[in-house]
Each structure stands twice: as C-alpha cells, then as structure tokens.
Length: 299
Ligand code: SAM
Image 1 (cartoon, rainbow, N blue to C red):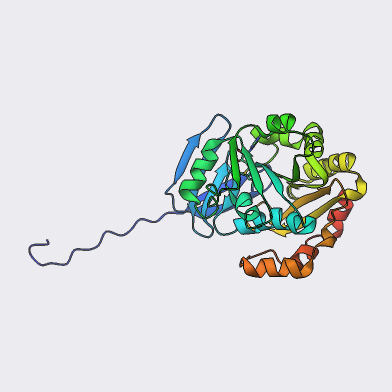
Image 2: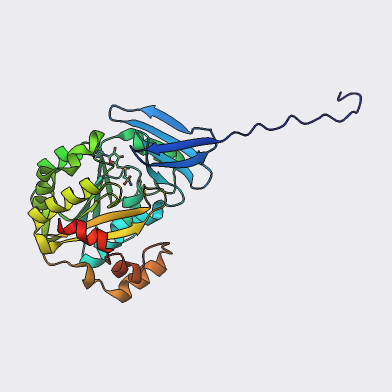
C-alpha cells in the first residue's frame, strides 16, 4: 500500500478504562490509570506498587491502599510537619517513623534550625519505588542532615535514648501489616519517653468518618499517655484518601501548643517556600473541628 501511494488507514488506538480501586467493606475509592504499571514488587512486608493515574499523577500503593500521589501529597506532608515545627519554635532533632516515600523529611528539612532528621522506614522497596517514580516526593534522601535507617521503627524506639528528639512524627500506613505495632499504647509510651521535655508527637490519625473505631481508640490512648489537655486533633482535605477528610494528632509532652505559633513567622515561611497548602490561617483553622469529630473525641 505504501508503494502504491495509497493512504494507509490508521489502526485505531485501543483505549480502555483501567481503574485502581481501594476497597473497604462498604465503600471504595477508584482512580483511573493508564494500565502502564510502573512498579510492582512484593517485599517481605507488603506489596509495593506504583500506578500512573490520569488525575493525580504517579501513585504509590501498599497492599492495595493509596499512600500518596504526585499531585496531592503536598497536603499531607506540609500538614504533618509545619504545624508542629512552627508551633514548637525550636526543633533541633526530629524523628520520622515510616514515611519511606520521603515527603515528610523533604518538608522537615526546609526548616534551617533543624540540625538532624532521622528517618526509620522498615521497607527499602518503598524508598526504591519512590526514588524511581515519585522523585519530587523522594527528593531529600541525599540531604546532609538526614540519617536514613532501613529498620523497624518499633525496635528503634525501644532502643532509643530518653529525651532524644524534640519532634517525633509517626508517618505510618494503616493499622494492618507491618504498621500495626505503630498503633499500640506500648509504642506511644516509648515515643513519649524519647521526647524532650517540651517535645511533640504527631501521628497521622486516619479518617474520623471512615476509620471511626481506630480514630476513637487512638485518641483515647494518646490522652492516657500525654494527658487529656495535651492532645489535639487537626484536619486536612486530602482527595485521594478515603472520604477526603484526614486527621492528624498533636500531642505535647510539655507546654508546646498549636495556638502559640508565631503568625508572622508562619506566613513568611509559607511564602518563602511557595507552600501549596500550609499557611498561618490554615495552621489555626485546621484545629477547628466539626461537631461529629468533637463528639468522637469525647468518647
Ligand atoms: N502517607 C501515608 C498514609 O497515610 O497513607 C503513609 C506513609 S507510608 C510511606 C507509611 C510507611 O510506614 C510505609 O512505607 C511502611 O513501610 C512504613 N512502616 C510500616 N510499619 C513500619 C515499622 N514498623 N517501622 C518503620 N516503618 C514502618
């Protein structure tokens, strides 16, 4: 056909809808992807996968659950870090347990007064997958102030010295698989011991609407360890997590309080780093809770 100069009828491009679906018993979250799966490996701990989604860019999943996507990870990572660092005002040493995608340490390391960040991630395949396919999230792994350990965070905290860190962030997945032990009272007790006198513990505390039982239980546990008045909950809108409403806990060993943030400093920091979610208004507004969340926290 080519030789005779006739036009070749183009072969139609076959497109098909390929959906990733995170399922729970009664609810599911689906994202369309290209079908070109970028990463798929089974580690000793979990199935690590990266999909190329159409709406949210490359997406990391662990055992079929969404961990982060290129286009909305900034919400989670800005909120889990800047709220405590700017409330405390003088964080020098920070520990991150989990967080192998790198987003939390990337945000922490924007703060020049922080001298050392230790990241303890159990699964080196999470780090590998993110370095290859979510490079903006995994961009700080070579930072000179970062100490990266591929190890079990539960064991690390048991062996950690008293009062070693000003800030401990538990950047865990859901309470199933290797992350289950990161949701126990014994673990949080050890975290408390390892905090300096004015230290802060931050955890991702699931969705109050979707993971209601876990949400109620963990806040009860935090209050038992840190004291009723020392535990606060704050929220952020994260489209690719179930229900879109996500919570974080802020527990203070001393007197550090989220309302004590220096507004001018928070505003300047947000501007200087071109942050896309966190700013001085969000810092306060995130602690304003709907009544159904307040009720859950009273239980
Ligand atoms: N942003 C995510 C979310 O809320 O869905 C969570 C981040 S994900 C990268 C959590 C990480 O915790 C995973 O990479 C997992 O391998 C790690 N992890 C689970 N159990 C752990 C443990 N015992 N010690 C250290 N890291 C752990």
